[in-house]
Length: 349
Image (cartoon, rainbow, N blue to C red; front, side, top):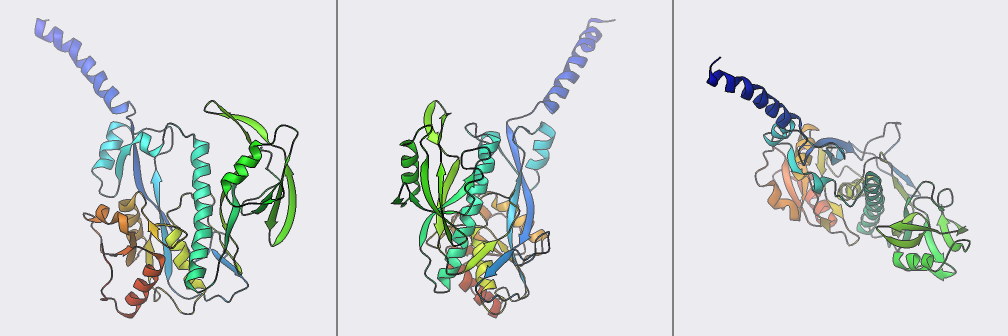
């Protein structure tokens, strides 16, 4: 065997093994893909209305209002080269640094809790903004947004419980609750006055000491959030595994449509995204291109884009009307104009 063939015989297997390693070694990237869309005006898997109303007349008309989601590579599963390149060349998917999708300082449990808290808060805000759009006064308060399993509060507090007082003092904000808990120790329960289903209850919960990132603190295992006192009951029933705040605008439009005569969408399918704040403004979200693709696949004719995401959709190829959403009120007005005239001048991105 010549020297050249000897070198080739040695180098070829090494090159092959290197190529295999490059293809199989996980890379520090995650992929965003279009997720499922959900019609908030429709029914859930149990054939129950997604929007449940008690104490007010409802109007179940034609049309769909869909909120959109993004599927993200699971925590712990980094993309390999072939998968990342496939997603890179797909206009409906996005390759992002793994740490941006799954921050190092958060666990899978932290992500789940954050997502559920955001979803619970977005539902309450959506209902409040819709009611205010209809002229109702909706005072705010503090509610339970999340209860940790096996915590001192588990079985005593429930999500959506309103916390009225802590140790006999009216509760003004979540920090007041945290500060009160820190003043209690093992064997010294904190006393909460709560409201559940319009009934008041007194609950005693004994804090436990925990260590988070080296800091010791007393905790009862709940996450407080902004709560509301509604003139009548409206609940939004969605899959609890769906997290995040980005469905807020679509929730609010759906509640408004359900409480008013006629179809806000003129019997058509509209979709969109956007975090909704207490003052009715619409905030930006992530994964806008993936959500637009999912909405188009669902047959939507119009898609609401948060104002601050407009620059992100300049190169998106879609047949849908991309309407800029600055406030929930503005979105209602845009739908009314679009219902009356499909060629109406709307605030487009």
